[in-house]
Length: 394
Image (cartoon, rainbow, N blue to C red):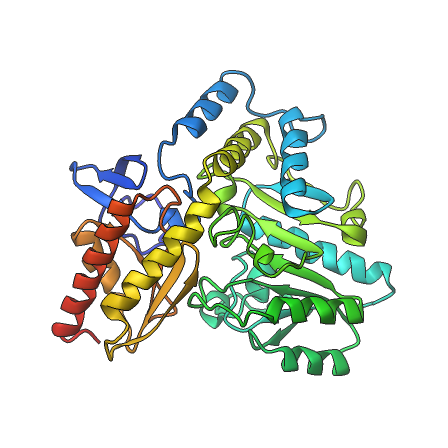
């Protein structure tokens, strides 16, 4: 690895040169099955023809002009994404952290407009919202925050999936203006809340005049078997953030809003140099058209349930498996012990996975995964976990 790069990553000893669908090949020509999708980014897999064509065509015409001027593809994308989400307006940026920054700023401005001098946002324990100063302050992970104090003020932390805790905050914290929550916690361990949790959050927000803000950066764009995870429960947030799979690898983020939240920002309140440029929007339009046109959102629901059932059959009775959970193609296999070394072991066997929260194997395969590849994933990973345990994994 090059010494010219800052040591911000503990990189695995592999460099990939090309990909196709759910497969990647490294610089030595070894093939890998990708069950991580670049951490929930490549929902269409690698080198998808529709995305490749859209990027090449746009690159041959125009990459960037800035938001000083109108951007036709940004307007088209805005109309499509707001219609799909049932929202009114959208701000485009470059990443999930930037999308969450926009949501945090929007909530604070909303609070000030209501006469709240020091507006507060309720965030959840074990959450992850990004690594900028504001978003790492909102994140419920001390490892992310350590060394970067003083943190940004204005956040009140609550246990995830605990409505009683939110009701208690409502009774004692009159300066709350919003709740920021992930529909499913990804980095926190693939935690799926109770079926009525988001509905109850919606009820409390309506009751107290709070903005309900959903971080769908990992769950959005079909990952959970709906275009957006909130659609499983029949509610709509006031603010929703997206990134990751929106561009399938081309950096783009989005902060969507409806109602009063959609009218809160005015010229000069927020901005982005690169956000929503023609190239990124062309990629995102191709992603949306492909997800909807090829039935991949429905595929994520069907294949995800198939994978969960097959992993449950193979591992569910094992004493070292605490839980197998998830929704759509966002799956977590929680073991009774730390298992981060499984990532390198899987890599050696040609499989890309991730371990989060120390003991939960996180699977985020591309939505284009075939039945045969899904079977290969179950077989390879089940064998790997068995070998890990047999060799005293701890």
